[in-house]
Image 1: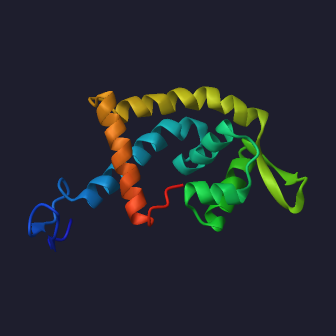
Image 2: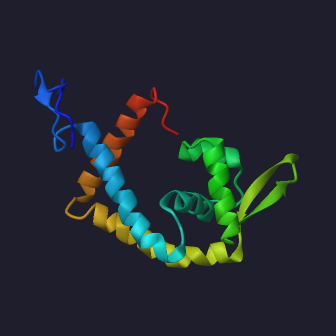
Length: 160
């Protein structure tokens, strides 16, 4: 149950908290809905949505450092370390010592991790179609711009 309290917004002096009008709740609910949708779709691969984000990064650019994952995914080092360990245990990735700095390592895909892309990519494309269903290409572009602006506003104008 959502507690009723008054919020000030740009358009009205005050309004009772309404999950269909409060921007923060809409964004939160959209994020939760998308995460739940993706989680269900990825269950056959024993892959959590956040683990999938790491895999997507590696499919785009194999051989990233844990610090790159921390920076891109906005997660703390401990969380990234746990996800990397889990993906490694599943056989999707491997750690390779960084030849330039033996104190660190790079994360690389295994053959199984590369093959996984062929199965997961259609799921991600379908998720994108589901999310944007009923929106014109212009509306999708506007949505991307607005969400980027919101992120900029909340991070001090530093979208990575």
